Image (cartoon, rainbow, N blue to C red; front, side, top):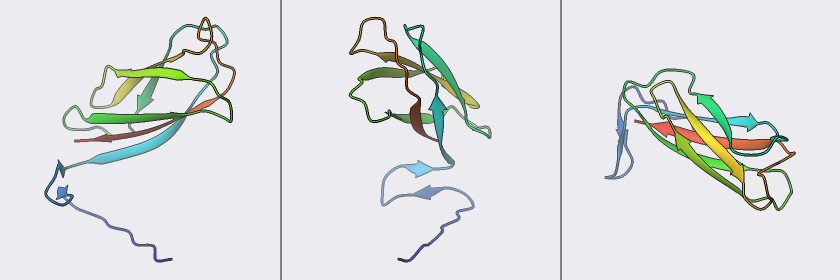
Length: 106
């Protein structure tokens, strides 16, 4: 298998689509929510964007059939927040660590 790294100094465009000036991504562990309700987490990018980026999020759980709803909010140049709620049980309690995969770009 060939492993190639591409470093770009400046902007780039994929095909004839969106022009990207900065992309950051990461994985963060969200802890348990034994008290229930909506739990809010803050995700820090690591470096600052020059403008408010677009953010895409995926949540992964352990090997359970739990169902979660989430929404991003307060998206800024240094961080964003995510509200998480477990919808398949009354009260929104979960006792597993969730993984959030995120990507932000401008």
